[in-house]
Length: 384
Image 1 (cartoon, rainbow, N blue to C red):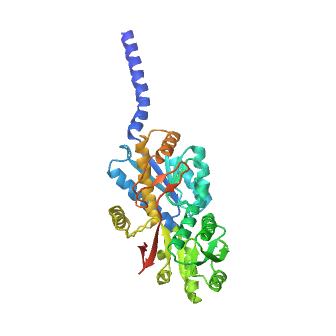
Image 2: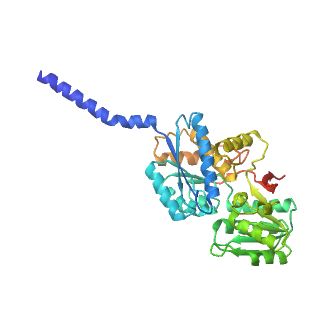
């Protein structure tokens, strides 16, 4: 009897021990990919952050409805950083506490650089939809979907030159911003190769970004046929308004930071008529993939997606393809996921809405064909 009790005791103890460890295996079966996002959904750059949040969310919902990544569902949590590096770091720490194992972010460049210096230490894979500064992908664990600032500068000059849009160009840029300065530098270098004369190149800073009369007057006096604005839409809306007030009629050309100008509060959007910008995405494109994306986005959010939403949408599908290429599982640790995704990203070719055949190099840079759009009748229209 005593021996029977002893056997039962040992059996019970073993069962209790198994019960104690069973949640680990249950967790493995029920594990989810936890994708975090960081960007501004309040403040001056909120249009960018909200678009990225929406585009990421839309793609994740589609992925989950189709069975997930490698058969595993995806969770998503987004944190507001107000386009502030310190707040972005706080957001990153909050997402780590939540259990994030992949980061799709950050949205803007300066916070992206700051967070990238943390993700590399944590071996966390980071894919930014829109962090375009060269430094954003300085670390090997960080990739991007958008064009880099240098690439945008070169591509803009080439587009203007090859399409003979203007031969005399003025530049107004933000010298306190890595995005604007980086584009300006490469645009200026490539302009010489395109036979473009830079008649003036005038800077402003974040502390002096309301009055652009001096910069515009120099452009006008220099006979600028076009003013290149490698800046964000808030300042661009002021420049267009002030140019109109002083009777300066010329062409304006921007890059991806210009996307959003039609949504600036109290801005007369008729002043943006004819404005051109370089972008990898045109919402009025006629291909089926773009049309399906635009319709799904409009149905979900009641708005037309901009290129930030499109880049974020492509980011999720790139992650899915890379993860499935390398058979990444949600119960792998963060470092294992990171290493696998770094490899997988260089092995895929994505048929995206921001490019027909997007590939990535080991240094995290995408290869895709840029497009240009022009504002006509209050809407973006693809240019040939």
